[in-house]
Length: 87
Image (cartoon, rainbow, N blue to C red):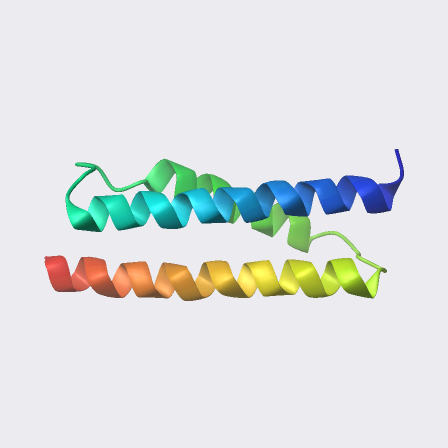
């Protein structure tokens, strides 16, 4: 399997994990879930940091990673703000 295909599949998994994390936080804030999904958030953050240490030569994949990382950090800031307001 080529490095490009491997990277693309990992980005697909990261994107799916981000969507699931967004849903988990929505459920937590709505009161459906009793615990904040911190473990999933830390795991996704770890995967993004691991991916950031790679040298991505394909412009498409680099742009896609940067977009996903930006979306994650935007959501993380939003979640942190809501959590501060809840306390």
